[in-house]
Image (cartoon, one colour):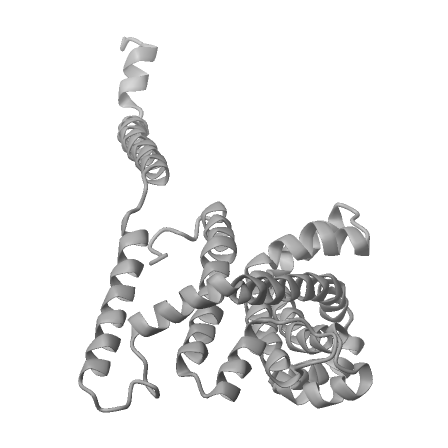
Length: 315
């Protein structure tokens, strides 16, 4: 009489056993691979933290080297004598003129006046453009009605508003601020709308499921998600406001309007003094570069790092 198979024999005879063993081996190997990936990820995080704490001297030395090369090329062209020195002054001549303007106090007055106007005008433009941009991005009829007008105002050169502003407000600071507003606001609005258009629709669905109101949806979901495009609009808005300010200061001179960098540039033109003209141009350029390096650059880098978009970037 044949004996009944034992449970152990049944388990050994089970055809599914090889599959269980294979699955167990697979799980073990996969676990080891996951552990290795985790270790490499931790090493990467540690190296990223070390790079973050370490000073990147290339960001300091490379711009300085580029500036030195440009100065040398400028001096070399002047030394060729192709143009008279009163028409094309050298960098040493311009540096001497900057020293004269500093001793006279004109340089400090011009930089402070223009920088104060630019920052105040830009901040007011941000306060106006942000709610308007959110409203246009959220309400389709308003966007269809005013969207083309906003784009047209962005294309319109800001200098075109200077004659009208002088007629409306006279030679006062209101003229300058009005031109700054008309240059910055359309760019900020379009940048914010562009950022909102790039938001995945799942974000709005999540907000709707969580019961967010329209105001909560705009401030807590839409605006944070649109930050990259919004920041691009802010950068462009600052560029337009700074350019608009210089145009207004060059044209609107006199009255109660203070002495800014545009006024200094126009004064050099009236005196036919190219050292003053070049000094004003370089100062205008220097302020724009410093604002980018000290304000927008760090904010953009921090935003990209927080969203994991900095890896592989050339910033």
